[in-house]
Length: 330
Image (tube, rainbow, N blue to C red; front, side, top):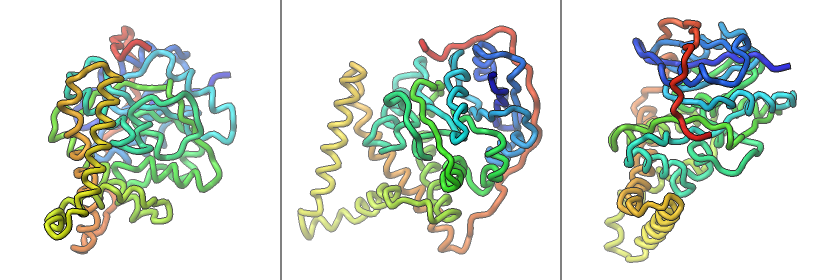
């Protein structure tokens, strides 16, 4: 018997999530087993928690307002919940095929191991199925057992982003397991320009460091690499004292170019060589500065505060009768 699914979509005030609702209308799943909750407000963690409290489905499916799903997504995900040990299942959020070239390059960089290390699984479909950690799953495409979510207290509302990472770490510590299914993907548009892309990475870094302050035991030193890179670049004048100081930069450039060439070959597009090499350092610098920001705030005695926004309303939405799904070929 198929479980019921509550789809939760946070939106900004006055925003209509038309694309995701149209793609949901075409889903290959019994409509009487689906409810869609749109939570309007200014704090996504709180919006998702509020909607989860009102949800009636066995499975909570978290999507973003720009997530576009393929018809078989729910069936590809819910089958893994037959195992009682599994409380979360997700897949990547990949770049829409209709995005302009620059936005596709943002997606290539995010989905490259050199760009995001293990977190690249969030942005590119790697392999097929594996047991996942919080580094593999993204909240724009994440299903969770409602009972386990509520029993754990939901998302920590002091965090946005990174609220799903903190919750998944807590659930992992309780002995639960997660699944990453590369085929269970959603399509999303990347940021519209370079400034917004850098702001996105800054936000990711800020969220990761705030996550550390909330749950220090779950932090891994590998997340500090971008901050170390920023500190290294600030101290580049030391190369005047010793040319050996330039060796790490040389290694970085070589890895950057090697990854870019691989992407260009995979995409069969030489234009990638003109754009992506510059995106990697911008990503790492932006993320590193984001990591530094909560540290600076604490030094200024401005600690992390709860509830930086509010929930205006949660609405149950009827799905459109006609589907305008344009995600991709899957």
